[in-house]
Amino acid sequence: KRFREPKHERRPWRIWFLDTSKQAIGMLFIHFANVYLSDFTEEDPCSLYLINFLLDATLGMLLIYIGIRAVSSFVEWQQWESLRFGEYG
Image (cartoon, rainbow, N blue to C red; front, side, top):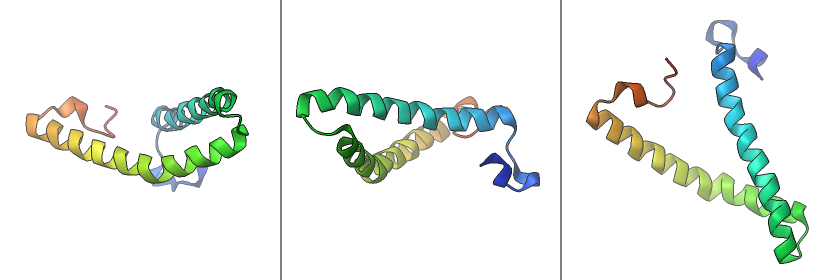
């Protein structure tokens, strides 16, 4: 995906790695949660993954958006320059 970005807007490798590692850790957590929960519900882990994915893509994104907006507003209000989202230094 990094090579699909325009060359003049391409993120450095370090920033690209920080962005993609968050996604990988999240997917790994969901995978192990589905396998763990499938023992209790007697459901197929794949069907649980679909349910978790749909909840994550709808309610999860809404909660993340609200949380980021709230924290960003608080950071701006306190004028904490080092805690701005997307600023890696």
